Length: 98
Image (spheres, rainbow, N blue to C red):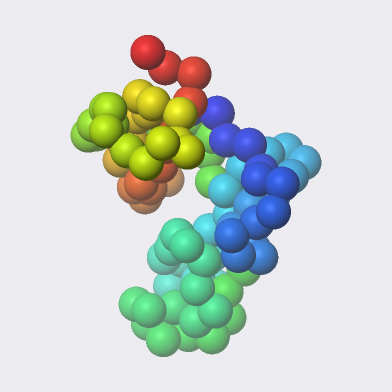
């Protein structure tokens, strides 16, 4: 899976540009990792978190091919749950696959 930064981010702090990738938050107190990033740790409620760059490759755990969508979406396209090396799963659209 290759990750590229969008031209207009959905939300600040989700992506890094150099190198391209997703950003998570890592709790400074308990070490837990969360995506999308959180301002405080949902596990231990600590408020000291730092940005953590996630891996750009992962394992597809489940996917579907969408063949019937609104006309402004190029079809077909693939949606998948991808498990990243850090153990987090993200739901994403995959590009460059048949």
